[in-house]
Image 1 (cartoon, rainbow, N blue to C red):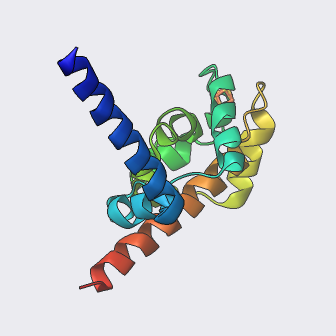
Image 2: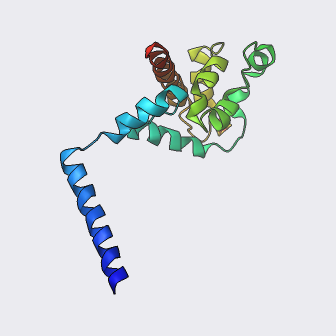
Image 3: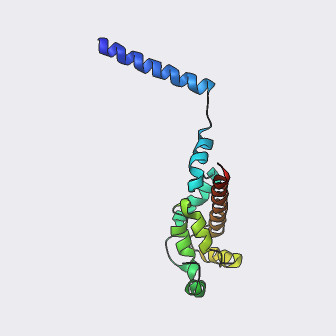
Length: 150
Ligand code: SF4
C-alpha cells in the first residue's frame, strides 16, 4: 500500500510538472530539432513536399524515363545514373539531397520534363527534382550557418 501511494505521488508530481512546464515554458521543438540536426542534413519537409515524395511510389521501374538518357548516363562525370535511379534511389533519403543534386547538374530542365512526359505512371519527376534541389539548398544553408556559428 505504501509503495503504491509513493508511485501515485511520483506519477502525479511528474504529470503536474510536465503540465506546468508546457504551460509556462513551452518550447518550439521543431526549431530545436533543426538547430541540433540541421547541420547534419536532417531537415523537416513540409506537408506539400511529403505529398510529392509519396508519389514516387507510383514508380514501377519500367525505365521509360531513361530511354533518352543513355548517352548522358554513359558520359556523366558526376555520377548521374538516370531518372529512374533519381526517382527510386535519390528520393529515398533526403539526407543525401546535396549528393543527389550534384549528380543532376548535367541534366537540363528539358530532359527532366521529357522524362516526366514519358512516364506511364505519372510520377511527378519535375517536382521531385525541384524538391531535391530545394532541400539540398536548405541543407547547404544550414551547414554553412553551422560553420559560421561559434
Ligand atoms: S518512367 Fe516512371 S515508372 Fe518508369 S522508371 Fe521512370 S519514373 Fe518509374
